[in-house]
Length: 397
Image (tube, rainbow, N blue to C red; front, side, top):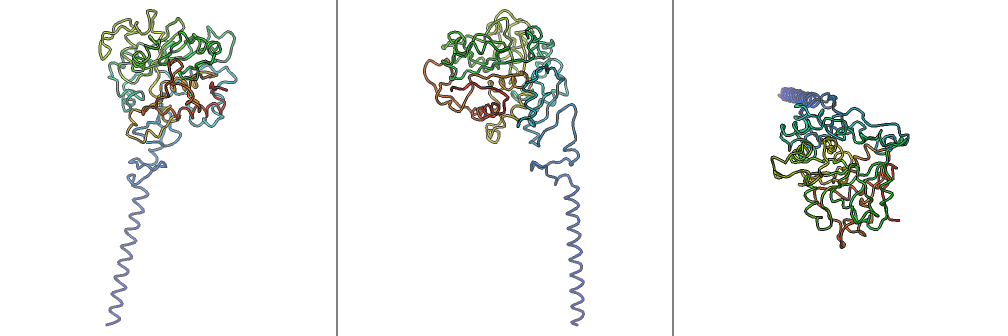
């Protein structure tokens, strides 16, 4: 009897062990081959196999590091290299040897123009809203507007460089913010001696020429920031963007109203739809308008700046949908990607608390911080770029 009992126990133990091994082998098989259980290096679950996860998708540029693909979209189209490269000390040559080398994409399209529109591209970029894509723009509005931007002046930042270079191999740019640090700086002549001068938003020049200069080669804005500047700084002397034969206008489009305004301005017509309906663009830009006067930042470029240069903790909060680099930051980083030398003035430095928000403030106003930008992170980035020898930022000594 005892022998039979021991035999039954052995048989049951063997069956239990066989079942256990079977389940273990099935589990191992599932973990190795079932794509649902795969985890990327970033810790994100994916329903794709590892081969699909890393497979290149031409003509898009692959990510340097994994990101959350649905929101961050760290893949971009690439452009033909339209930049002049004769300058031996160009930023683009220095940056690849710096700590920023892995982030920097030399063929990222800074500007968008007619060739960038296609239905497949619209489908890709419609996933992203605001300044980061075309999700906020009707396809007909986009197609009709980009079709206007079909000359070299629309696709190349310095389209007149060969005419004005005067034997120089290197493009020197002054990028002028509106920070209070410029008040009393007496840097106006120094700013104007650069080959090109960038300005943005409430760029008031009259009465401040000694500190900020008089020339404007490029004025960066969105329709929204322009309207805000006209409303908030009119009493301080801002009556619209700078206007000169030299001045060209670079839209930072974050809504269909930017495309609508650009098209109306280039075609000398009133705005026909939207909140600016009936507005004549010449009240903003003057009468001397042609399509050569306008450029537009590419949404891939704005998203690339957010993802690789200004990836703020705001993206982890409820404000992530409205966050983007400030207009001034986009302007400065666009110069970093196109100029050979960048001299920045009027941007935040570590002692910003000493200065009023703007150089044209009649009384002291502390710097304002808003959820849609991360000005502290931008300030740190400017310091890092200066330390790396990629820009020179004006500071009080």
